Length: 322
Image (cartoon, rainbow, N blue to C red; front, side, top):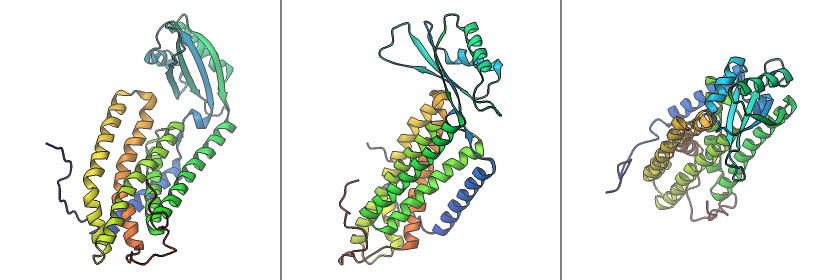
């Protein structure tokens, strides 16, 4: 007995109110972008600057204990992670403590670092501090610039790939869906003021890949059905294609969400922001591949006479495997 999340032979009309779906998506993008402009992002240490302290002790690293020892200092954003390395001895327990620069300071002061070391020594007597590194505001600014370039280049590469594989209308639909996903993800991080660091940039790039995969699956079926149903309206062909791939889309999304929710609940504070971004990205990515990318394609229209090659159609590389 096979599990089916979507009943076989479904015939949902996804484009009955396609203008409404595009309007809702546009409104959410405006809200997200407006939130970013008004209150910005809650940048983490990677983007605001700070200091990383590397510790070592014979006692196992207790992240909760470390955090409890540092809480009275009121240092704000502190990230504590245990470092694992196969070359470590059995009694060599290493942790990385990242302290965010305080408001008005360009870096964590020597007095602050000393107070952190004293607080940890009071809780872990045999602790030693093997390295201390600082990230200044200049480096943080360069990281922000590099992160923006990475996301833009990823979306640009997607535009070229889809243009070569399908046609320019498909490319614009796919890129519109990716921009939609990225803006909504940044918007919710701005609205909820969740810490935004390099791990979230990695999540954004992963979301771009996930959403693109969903969109390409739908577009592949659309291209097949455009050849199969030459007389049917484009909206009907899109509906048939989405319904035929709906079971695969939901199965992929649900299984991915099950793993992500488990990580969100059990993974701890270190990866919670990354996992939240991934959960949100899977949801909006699934939505955008159905309602945004396909609605843009419906609005732009697409070549229907496949018997005559079009040199400007951009399909000369249509047989490239995804």
